[in-house]
Image (cartoon, rainbow, N blue to C red; front, side):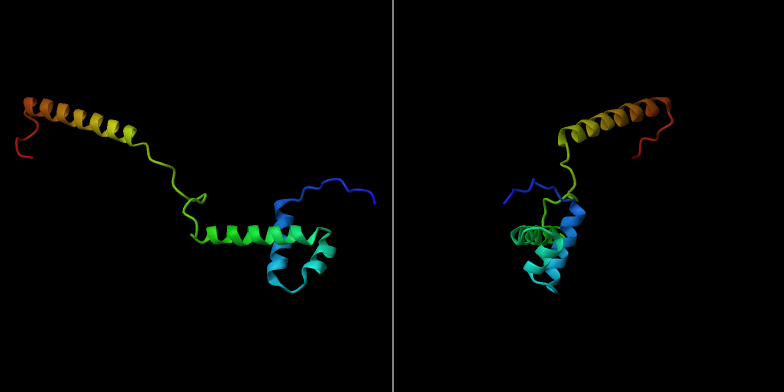
Length: 103
């Protein structure tokens, strides 16, 4: 029996086969014959789909929708810069008589 070359399947095909396996309308053997893939491969795709589906609904904190980490050093530097500008401008405006002493 000749060995078949390794095939690569598109993500859409994998999703279609895994969803069909999750529905349970056909057995794994029937799906394997219909889509020309091994039953173990269908089982693996079904497990991957089940894991990924939990992440879609907030089951995983490390998902793609997680916000990127915040650079605190840059934020603190910006706060310091703005505070310095405010102090300078308030001093300059009070010397010019345009800013009241009450704040």
